[in-house]
Image 1 (cartoon, rainbow, N blue to C red):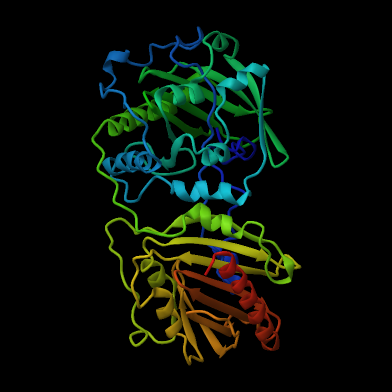
Image 2 (tube, helix red, strand yellow):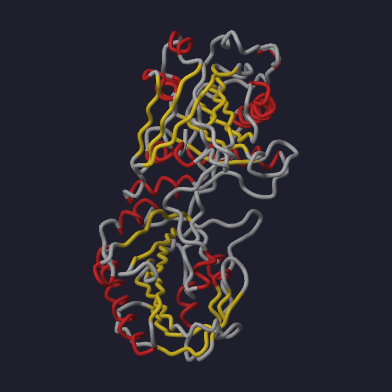
Length: 493
């Protein structure tokens, strides 16, 4: 299950977490770069019977007999987070999708360290039907006892869209543990939960749904299917269809939004598409898995980076928010690159080249909210692998700013803009490498901006904020330098 309280209101079975950062468009208009955290897909999971005959009003003849399902064999041991992600991505490649379809599990897990996950509650009527409902995504992200991977992809040969993107949750543990966690209920409960109501509360907001069990195609050890609609139905509300499958140590939850969902007949095309995907996932899981490439040695894991900032305050005593962190990877088919030397691209602040040179680093983006809604500071933290050699990417970034009165900024998401004029600032921070500048953008606002950065050892911090005038820029830079010192001290740098 996922974010019941925000799904199905015209958006189908996916939703974005409350921790999603401000949009890049907002950052551009205000002259600051918000952290580009990928928002987690939250697939709605429902409840339905497992490994038992379908309800009497759900004909099973629409599906082939179990003997026609691919005989892949159940996995004998649990899959790791990385292996589960590789299974999703492997199916994506077989469907010729041009991009990875699994999310970064380490980034999702890191959010648990921040304590920023909202409080959730799931209740059903009848009450004991809650045993059929999976936990919220925040629960399985934080559960270190069960491995997981989340993803999404369109049906085979299809294109992604609100009603053509299948949400995927894979979970794995020892056979008895995963069966107990995701399919741990007595069969007599199924006859009493053919139809029931569900109320999902997240951060104090409750949404209600009606669920009906469906005939599930025979795929593996256990499987169940469901259809779900909002209750009461609202104009434009989507419904969703779900399929859950248990194959040895592999638990699969798939969901797909349906614009018009009034009967089981409306649900069958979606269920057929998900059945095909479930079989492909099981087949991929049965293939020999290539050993995962060893990650670059790093003294700080994503959850440790998030924990570093938990409870910290920034300038003015405002709390620091760093909800998630990730291991910086590479686009498929690419190799690590070094940023252009300062001599090749003087007075350039290139986020694209900088990020491409950080493979294996752990990175997090966050904010410090000021006294007003429009007063905030964006920050980016990077911890390099211990094997990275000089010249360090951050130092090259600093060298390109030296003596510049005008700077071309190349944005990570594409496009560019010019800082002009640019004035150097003095922070007095003790660091291996650092910079501090004040600048204006040619956006007509006349607002001044301050950007500072510093590196000690493998850890670097960069922050940007706005000021009403150039006269205030030096004081703002000093506040950020004090904050940097506090972070380095807490990190033992």
